[in-house]
Image (cartoon, rainbow, N blue to C red):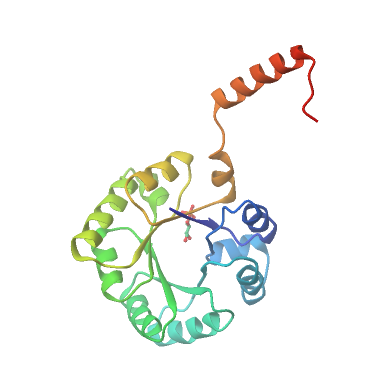
Amino acid sequence: MKFFVDTAEIDQIAELNDLGMVDGVTTNPSLILKSGRDILEVTREIAALVDGPVSAEVVALEAEAMIAEGRKLAAIANNIAVKVPLTWDGLRACKVLSGEGHMVNVTLCFSANQALLAAKAGATFISPFIGRLDDINLDGMELISDIRQIYDNYGFETQILAASIRTVNHACQSALVGADVMTAPPAVIKAMVAHPLTDKGLAAFMADWEKTGQKIL
Ligand code: E4P
């Protein structure tokens, strides 16, 4: 499973990238706002830092304007994936931009039918939002599972990018149901290492080691 980091904070991306935990990055207008950075500048910096796809989102609502914005974002670097919303205008932009050879991430996906349309429009990635479905008492993971089955039924190559990941359980369950990629905030990726039995076991080993009076170095 590929790990994308869902942030526009350069320091946090760099920290996880050094650990080999970053296969790509996703941003959106809210994350750009949070970073306080200029979208073109920060996207250029992120794209230079990581080898994998860096999603940068268009903000136009009409297809021709989305296509123009997408071309400008894609020109930043070879590893930019243009992010478009799951509307008919977004799908039209997806069709045109993917036809030009650009990676396209179709975002704000909340149904299997939407994911089917995105695949037919040539999306490189489909981003189903798990957490936002869970927020309204729907099952985000069931959506990932349904999309997996539909894409496998017909051999669609669009990669399922599990998004709106809020917990370590979302991460694990996305992997179990076969998401190709997950994008998670740095804090969730960091929390994946934690287990109380690891902490307890390490403390016991350290206590016993102390008693041996030995040193390795
Ligand atoms: C990623 O592409 C999405 O923009 C992001 O995962 C949304 O997450 P949120 O629902 O926690 O804002």
